Length: 385
Image (tube, rainbow, N blue to C red):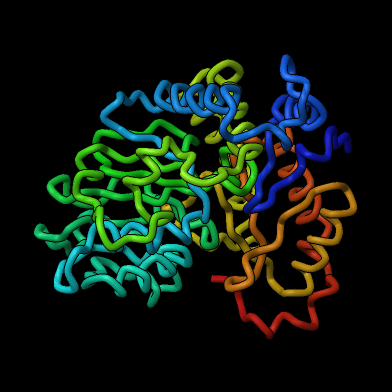
């Protein structure tokens, strides 16, 4: 089997694969940025060069999203985990103020406790009792039209669930953590007061988080009694350079945005590529449902993360060992769910997904109808459902 570049076979849930052209440019910049003569790792965040990097990245992001200057674009640190606390601190001004949340999986569950520190939280839908295999439809949701804001996670990385429609009511400010599917497809930004996403899935290396916030929501954010680093106003006023930012991460993020515009052709084309990749893998899984078990209900499957299992832990271990032997990496499931997981972020090539699909077919053919190394453990998990 021809595996090509090993980076093409990185199916990790994060940090994810980056486009080869971006890696080559980043490698060059680590030694010397073209036209500057210094390593990107040593260029001042106060330099004109970096100011241009930030401005270009913001401009390219506006082009991809189709948004105007009424939206502020910030490059922050701390990942989604920091935003889980920054958002309610900024918007819940009194302990009696309320916010709506959806608990649809591991990451949305982690967003709720921080909000409860600052106000009341109404969980409009909770998927925990069903093992996070489904997502709510419009009729399942219970929202408060007086809520200060509504928060949800668009793609649950651990369970492989993705919203294919926009939940919530438009009269309540909609805030979305899109960390694992941001820029993977077109976004109707006008329906959101705020979108945020850490970079290490679809945008670049770890260390930078993108925030897209409408000016009307910023006006409602707390100005006083907020630590400076946790103030959205401070970061907007400082142009994302309130303190020393992650220069390298923002530089690479800018390279990824240019790649999406120039090489891919925008979000509609990116969506087509990602759909083809996901279809390639799901077709293999669905063809032999007695061998493979996908965690998510088919209606809510993610195009970014595919969580699945085999009939025994030992067979899963065999799968991982054989996959690694031929160069496929990052296929372990999350520690809280176990099993296996394939992440198909923007930087993963379609050809790489096809190679993995071929390997999976060959693997199932070898182990489907014969005893395998995991047969003695079959009773540990029980039959697939």
